[in-house]
Length: 383
Image (cartoon, rainbow, N blue to C red; front, side, top):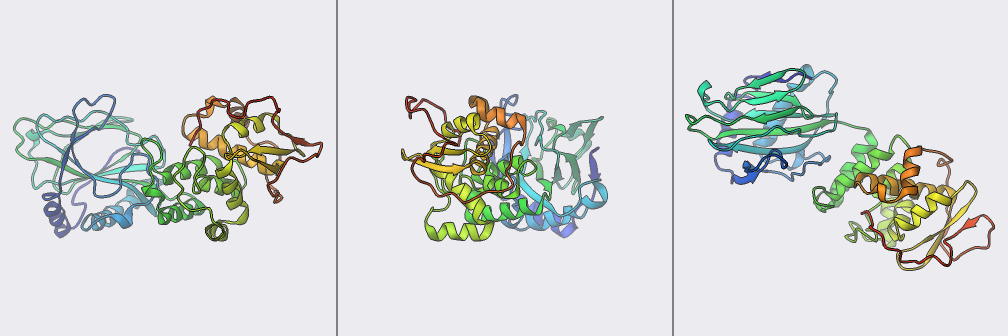
């Protein structure tokens, strides 16, 4: 998609309100457009939760008049952006500010292909000699000069940067940035909204992600590979905590488990609960190597007990773990789970029988860890 420039993007009264609002926001110095190449940074203000990998719709969290501006700029999308149909989901929003001596450096806002960035220039005037263009390097090299109430829309995957303002510039170069994605599947959006309502957006997971975003990325990795119950369980796999991610979003008592099962189905909830109590990834990496159709598996629990599950349940748990580790860049440490992921879906995951946990069985098809293998083999757990 080539960059799109729209002048008089929002009504004049709203634009005046935005200028008044941005004049009083507490800008902070130090944000970097590219953490690898930007040695200094620029000024910024974040009116809502802001993480680069966010997938949740933040529209309801926007303050006025920013929410009104977002509603207005969306009116330009449908006729101007081919292939990106409404409704759109706002995933990031912030203000950037530049003065003489603060530079921008080329970067991509996202590597995901279903996202765009809309930049609204907040200035009362902008002489051409003030410079400060937004440079976009895509199919062609584009340079867009700031102007009052001008909107620039680009593909979030395009390399772009804010060029430095000139020494003659006497104003703060200010932009209001909206980053948005298209609506994904109805199940994706329902799970995302439910997780936000449970507070997952405010749970940190790793350095640059929320629990919500991690869970939804795991779901998206699985949704076209496995049955819906397994993919749904992927979106729930850490809500009760795990042996590595100990901050439970939801307590695993009978009442709360029943509510989750009522919302997303007993099979998906049961898989998520089982995942939460396993000594994983180790026990699932072993399972991915040895499990065959018709087998039962004895999986080790985090509290030094074991759980007997059927083939379909064990295979589903292995797939959830593989997606979980893949999202965190840790799958390569577990060769059998990695091999499962690389081979693609094989065997039956379409039916599943409820199998209560318990002690080891004498069933000839049951597989278990060799008695001589240490239970506490050193490992780096994925979260």
